[in-house]
Length: 454
Image (tube, rainbow, N blue to C red; front, top):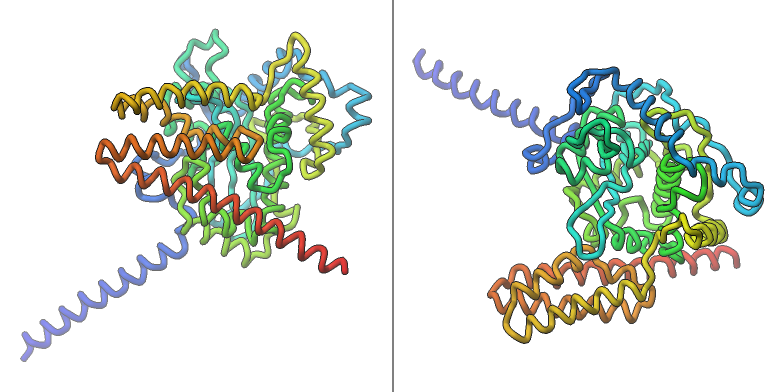
């Protein structure tokens, strides 16, 4: 009898332990889903431990904050265009702005709740090339329990040990990305932003950036991107350009949240992620959106702009939602680009079309001679970059997109690779639905506004 009772108690104990382990597991999942990276991501990227020190490429250990501040001051001093427009009366008159004195200054703001850190990287690669510099670097920190967002913007010339001699100018965050890969890049980004780790990443190139800007409802994506890419016109060099991009992100997120029910609204879940290379999932985005809604997110004060490393500069604060301001700024970029020192920020339609024609004609010749691998290799990078999004005319854009899609699908099917062919088809369908629904949603919002006026 005693042995039976002991066995029963033993089994009950095991069941009780398993029950509590299960409950504990569920609690951990529910309360930490926003603060931990995905399993696949964790395998590739170890967490970053924040340190007040940094090891330079010459193998010396220095104070990180002072080292980065000295580098920032040196970069600003060496930038000949740092104050080109800052003192221009015409600029001040034509394009209104306010001054932000806080973005570059470190201030104590304690927060001990859950945080999601998403690194958003705009890569600078030429059409058809896989070599990617980290041209735009931003961290979107979502403070889940507070319903706020911090945008930390990092200039591309910020110091990072890319394995080059310290006597060169190549040890920058822009070069680190292609030199040492994503893991090293994200680790350094987290350190500069003074964060423990980066949970998720989103990368996109030039063409995808134009598509994202257009999807967000900005009338002239080419003008807008041209302004956001310029660092030699508005004063402040790369520091002001980086701040401009962060400010645009803030305004775009608030605009998207109000229009689509959240910065990661239904349109994103339906295919917006297809415009980027990311480890985020629609399920994660949906969870974040739900938490932000519960916190009544949506006011301007809910998003804070920071520029790091610390550099006390009076950043010019523009309204990028004003299309007239964008037009004026774009005209100044064009004016500067016409000078001997200027460079074009955005490729013309004719340049894009000419390069696509060359690639497509080569792929057609390869297809006609049964060289399926050559067809794929010729068009694959252009397709991944979504180069057609740089073409302004929608009908012309559709033509090149469909031509590339059909050639790639045909080549994959001839190789009996139906999976890759189906993936090509799915990506195009997602993009088509994305812009179609965006157009319908914009029309609905316009109609609703008109009804309210009546």
